Length: 128
Image (tube, rainbow, N blue to C red; front, side, top):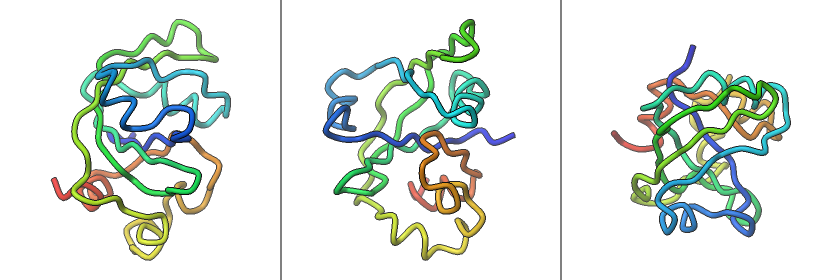
């Protein structure tokens, strides 16, 4: 089981800047069964990469899971808090060209909105 994840968001609906402004938000409303399963597997302290879709198509920042309410198995509510902006956005093209991501659902299943990351993949995106 992975302990890091990438969350995709449409910046016109809710951007990383919105998360920074709000500081904390509930990440819910995910409907894909695999994405919902990934949300349910999160625990407080799980590290997250925030990826903006649309015109941006880039990993832009980090966040951390504060709490998980999985009482509704079809719509778990994951509370996350903003951490930091990445030094520079990492485009989908850059991610696809990185061999670490060759088997990643991020590359293989483009529509998946909650993507597990290995610790090595997380580190390659954050430098941490």
